[in-house]
Length: 387
Image (cartoon, rainbow, N blue to C red):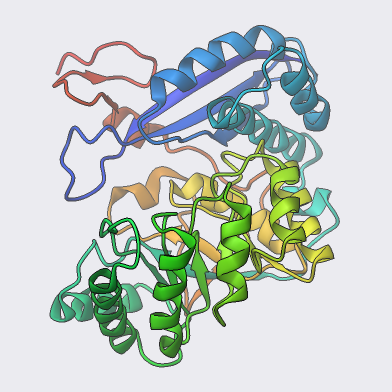
């Protein structure tokens, strides 16, 4: 089997409340073959669509003619064929292509991807909601938002409080974070897993202050208390709090995770399969974390496609913790065949060939690409929409 074409499909999916021209698009990659099998992958990297398209155009000449049934060889070729290995933009494009190749491999063998890598450890996957608060800090609003998420089947919740810190020892900020976090804990109940995302906003000293304030709320983990490349700072935070530390969404290679694990900086590794060079590399990270008696919880704030793909890793990793899922309550749930339905805090692992999902072509056509700062809407093939 040979790859004949690599196709990008961009779907306009603005974040609610941000506005139509938020430049939030889902970036999908379709890999076509000479045997008529097409694979689906996701390479969404918010606000970097043009960069992704440029890298994809550069790499397509290498990819066309290769065997999609050898995704490991494909990744190594794309990493090494050009002098510059590249950062997260190149890694994201490679991820999308690699994921599509696993889909092809599963379809060619009529097996789900989880079956191809040793079979399942579990039939259903524990999931937590992200983005469910809408950024609210008012307790009354948080209570309503929590009730909505609970009604949709969620039992675990991640939150982030996007307040800019003063450079150091910002006690007022710590008090604001605690007040909002306490309201969230009250809204979701005392036993629901609760996770806090720092988005790398703090220096180590301030992150420790925040962690100490949040410890009474019994958090499952504190994500990215400092920037992910600050390994010593993250290790310092981990050593001074009882809250487990999680990180990895912005890392692209197993070597980066190894350094965090060796320094005891994290208890939870969070590879993003759309950015870490794909499924096989993400699985390596899961095994690496297992060797350090740590957990894996794939990062996933994008579309239902990468969520469904992540479920295959979740199914096979013995040290799996929880799967992130962006809280969606609109048409985006239906961007895939067999939409994902959360039931009492869990998602069912797909059992169809490949990823077990397909792209909803009608919704793709109905939601053309959005370009920031321009009223122009683009079709998935890049042409201008004239309606």
